Length: 120
Image (cartoon, rainbow, N blue to C red; front, top):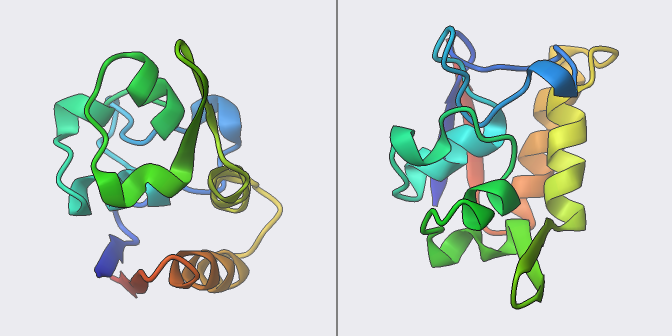
């Protein structure tokens, strides 16, 4: 699978308090937001959602190819995986350069068979 992240719409480096899969105020998305749409989720599924585990807890249907981002710990509890937490940390940390951020995100997605391309 190929994932295209548009830098003009990419929400990054603003810290976790302002980060969403899709932020309603400006339509920007974190890297997992772009991946969610590429995997078939729609914007209503991810708007103002902070992580895939939250989407699941709110009853959103998460495509099978995204299973590596969240795991069920009990019949009623879902948490982000280590890989998801890593992506969110790299994406949101204001101390990283975009070059470093893109390199780390590309490498992490590649471990799950996803080729990432950054445009604009």
